[in-house]
Image (cartoon, helix red, strand yellow):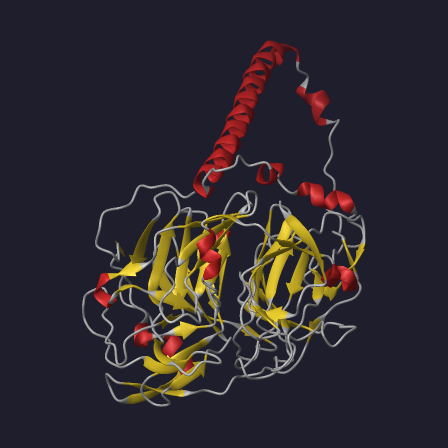
Length: 534
């Protein structure tokens, strides 16, 4: 990497961060909440056996000579939909808002952290709604079961005023969703809309093509600033929080209660909405993070958030969601600095399944931060801030658990090819193990057949006795962060059902069942592009 030591990184929010090439890589963001950055910064957390977390903000490096399609960085973007791709080296960014007069020319882009190179992919195109659409403030999540990135929600930038949107069946949306916006520090207005990815839309990595699942969301839900978390055991995406636009009653954004979660199952290709319970339900919020704790694969950690971009962060800032039981648990954390606790517009990056890094963001409506906080998530009943990384008891060898194939992936391979290599290697190992087991089973059968006449079963029976079960030791830490409080119920917000003129609150709205699945449709109506991801 061609780098220069940067030392203390500028305070910022809205950066894009992921754990790639065994470093925390962060692109862009809004330094001091003014303008937008186009640099790539990285934090190499493997260089020290023990690092004081409070000093990590002084250890950032910056990439100075990017390669590839460098004109990408001449188009500053923010609130893009982004995710890490398989192989541990690539970050994909889609759409985003921008401060240029027109739309972004290259909307779907990839940064290769091994070769320090930018590449562009096919833009998302919807002919029924004006062609290329520039969507921001939505969600992107990688789905390994189909080797694709799933997009949902958000808003669209640079649209005509009073634009009428069409659904997949070419019927028009019944209401107007456009609004007037303005560029910061510029005397020029333009229009945006609350219609982002209305259907679950997927980008297929191997074929560089787009599809959409055209099952409609009931009541024309238009969510933005929510989170998407993929749960591999159930092949389901969980959407949490955010807000939706109400075009009928309030003509404004309405916060989505966290007593509900919208879900999409990749096997059945169906939407659902599930009820979430708990002694304390999180305050509705936007600009939060929701991370699957892969060391405890049925737990999502919700961190931070705010009621809006102009508010201070919520004070109930840390919860875990038990996916299997659909129960929220609040955690009271001991923050030794006011900059460590509540924040929003931040990033959350999980390292080694045990440490969750909380990076950047806003600590008040006016203040950004460069502070790095580390949560020890090894025990979900006793989540706590850590003063050091690696975590106490892990040591520097914890970093070696990362797959070396990520660091040494051949240059120029697509993420699909990298994933294919990994899958092939795993399959070969499985096949080898199966062959060994079959060989041993055959030899054991031959031996048992040979020894059958010499076995004294009565003697063997007296050599064994039943052992009573012992009490299993508890794995729970003696200290706990669990909070027991009375149930907190969000205020219901009334929305009007235009079909039957009855008022329904937003929780009833999410409880309705969607219409039947109609399958995947290519939004551009064209044939699949077989070009490969760089």
